[in-house]
Image 1 (spheres, rainbow, N blue to C red):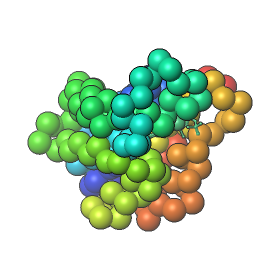
Image 2: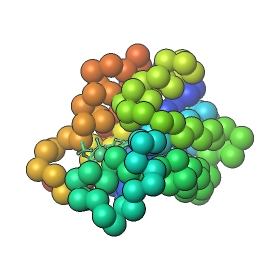
Image 3: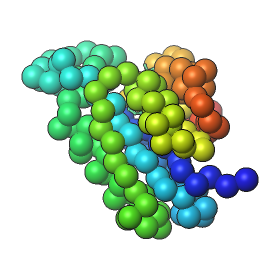
Length: 150
Ligand SMILES: Nc1ncnc2c1ncn2[C@@H]1O[C@H](COP(=O)(O)OP(=O)(O)OP(=O)(O)O)[C@@H](O)[C@H]1O
Ligand SMILES: [Mg+2]
């Protein structure tokens, strides 16, 4: 078994960073390529984030914020020992799970890594929508990193 190509999703949250660090450590250990994906909602790019209720914040991640999230994650990956030439960043408009599954399909990835919770980690659900949907549609292995305390 080898993971030659790993896809990881981040929404820029602290909990998602745990998933990125985990994916990067796996990539460093296996010498894998690491594809870091952030999906954003383009229609709300002009809305001020402060004006939006916390549970809708995911919907106002604009392309500039998304670019920042993937850049931050790429830096984290280098710190974990992944060679920079093996790190690729992808900021894509649309649904996060569709983006992750789409990239995994297009690039024949071996595993998708996501956190169990993201930006809405305060919600009462144990599992976020993204890992739930990814686990149903992934063309490859899925690693759900537990990013909150039990
Ligand atoms: N916009 C996104 N782009 C890429 N990956 C994402 C995105 N949002 C979430 N993820 C991935 O999914 C994981 C879980 O986040 P998710 O959004 O499912 O949970 P949540 O924000 O806590 O709850 P909710 O289901 O209400 O959004 C994150 O740690 C991250 O790995
Ligand atoms: Mg979310």
